Amino acid sequence: MSNGERRYDEERLGELLRALPPAPSGWVQAAQELPRARAEIDGLVERARADAAFRAALLADAEAALAAEGVEPRRALVDLLRRRVAE
Amino acid sequence: MEARSDAALVTACLAHEQAAWDELVERFSRYVLAIATQAFRLPAQDAEDVFQDVFLRIYDRLDTLREPSALRPWIAQLTRRECIDHMRAGSRETPVEELPEEVESELDLLDEAFDVRVELAALSQECQDVLDRFFCRDESYRTIGAALDLPAGTIASRISRCLGRLRERLEGRNPVAAASSDRRDR
Image (cartoon, each protein chain N blue to C red):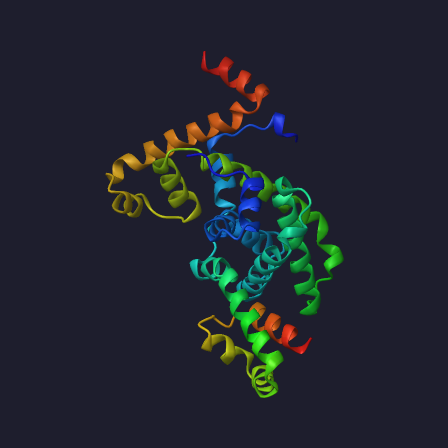
């Protein structure tokens, strides 16, 4: 049905409103904090490039390195950090 | 106050405006979640992984979006791809090739639902709160009344009135339906 033919009775509107429930607030907050998390990761990668021991420690426990910077070690960020350090 | 357009939001995000990024996440969080859980039927843990991966990709690749007004289809595409990759990586028994028809139909519904939310955002804050709490958060009249400091007995009529306004906005941008509605109301 094209947009020009749509009708919206109360039942249909209710169905469409129910189709998009809110995401858990923790997920939304983590996504909103991505710019800061990315900046922290950039800093860790820079340190790892200059310090082989730090790089080895970081690869051994990327979760702890992120947590130490105040970033919740969610999987996507841990994967990203490992990938960037390994480059 | 009218919300920023998607194109304006993209421009502000590319200028590293944190408030714009917060708004982008807020605007699309439900949509990304619904694609993962309703269209692709991922369980919560997988959906959370997809959700975070999608927003990380959006953040990293926003400068590659050629047409900023195409933000929504671009996000839908990124989310679909992440869901498919996630299912393949998890070696689910259901072959991904069997999904498209029902997935496409669910994605159409979610797109229409997103249009409704865009119009909802243009209603009064009171209407947004009442409709979101009742339909999206599944709250009772009593809970809504307590949260918004309204008598519980008036919630049903407020919902109906706000739905009417939402419908007017949706059908107002649709000449055929608006004309039909005018005829019915005479």
